[in-house]
Image (cartoon, rainbow over all chains, first blue to last red; front, top):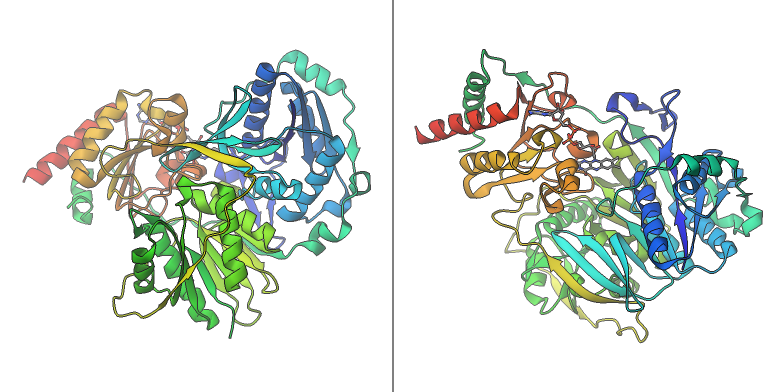
Length: 267
Length: 334
Ligand SMILES: Cc1cc2nc3c(=O)[nH]c(=O)nc-3n(C[C@H](O)[C@H](O)[C@H](O)COP(=O)(O)OP(=O)(O)OC[C@H]3O[C@@H](n4cnc5c(N)ncnc54)[C@H](O)[C@@H]3O)c2cc1C
């Protein structure tokens, strides 16, 4: 089976909050210096899902990443994990694209890549955290989408997608080609092997621009975006912690219980 | 007449859900600010009763579609249902909850209606001059807040994060109109089919409904430690006490994923949130930051959680939690 995985390189979401600086004037996050970007963790889990499917069913995995120069790093990381091929999509005209435009660009690239059975995306990118790209890409490609998928299985020739819902899960039989957005409840991502890193680094990653994939120029970039970012601010911290320190933990717990009792919390 | 606001309602056991009541509150505010009407779409088997309830909660018009509920059908079917409803009712703004339904259907509706979606918002407002919709949402895991403006030239589709608005209060004297719409034709060649829906058995109150939540993190170290937390939840909260967790205990398999709090878990706002062995990562805190009172128990005095709490105890939870349970027991007994 042919699987396309969409991957994005982002600021490490596990950085401590103090490392996130917001430039409210420019409406931008100022990336901390010297800290490398990482693959969006949900996309990494999508790569893992693709690898497991390939191990069971055979086939080929192609990684696609849209972005600036960092898109090549995302593709190389996917290759180091075991993806077979990859392509980066970079063009100044892509700059300022909203989710709809990103879906259009990815969709055109996937058409050029050729026949596919499955497209996998992370459930959301852990930078803008919106979860739009996957479903919009499915619409662009005209294929069905199942969100928050934790497992994909071939049962007697039928494809079953198990997805997480509030308080449980659902199983769908899905006709391929289809798109799945992968959730954090899916298997954790393996680490790249030494050999994987070496061979990924040796590979020349093709970089396609808008012309290469025949994008509609009126549908991309900031000019096409209906939604505009009008403010970006740092969140406010609201609380002042009263530290309860006593000789023993038991005494502290007694004082805490009394203070909580005063707030009426457990009455 | 200005185009109206449409809330996509959800029901459970024939009643409007808590999240939908929040949407009706937000939708009513928007409609009043825009000088337009508020409509709600109620689906499911026999939607009449819930439709009447939606009117008491602020809707001027309720469209009903007698159709299987969302968990009994497919995202594709519900996308068709919403596209059909919007074609017939021509709203300016559609409001979903950031729920299973909203996450699936809002993007598809926007794409198929030439609209623009904005997901997981915590605030919506109308710019009364330009009539643009202003949508506030946390980004970068909660490390920043963004405001997005979408102009009135297209259909605006928003999904509101649960617990961002207070629930609309019912007013039995409110009047409104109920309009039944035909369900969309069933798909001749469906692209997917629902095989099974499995719901976890939840003992006691759900974490989002609990008044007192005792939450354990990676510091709990294994499933056994959670027994101490259960005891504390029971003593402090009785029937409205529950145990929750960060992602770490869920990923480790100590507890079920269903009780994860945070960006990708559940968003909760209990009266009291006791965070035990939790470092206070931003993706976790966005799920509980609006709790009334937050207590942190952590053995690391520099843990970030202490900057997000009202009360803190530095210590090993194995001593602190039983001691707190005992102290609360004696206060309550007194
Ligand atoms: C994109 C993304 C999304 C995420 N979404 C979520 C989410 O929705 N929900 C979520 O919870 N997490 C989420 N996470 C994970 C999050 O970033 C943190 O990794 C996680 O919340 C940390 O959990 P923790 O605080 O329990 O564990 P740790 O960070 O391991 O902290 C354990 C704490 O316990 C303390 N401790 C250890 N032993 C003891 C003891 N004996 N007594 C007292 N204290 C002790 C330690 O001092 C430490 O502070 C997400 C991460 C990413 C990247």
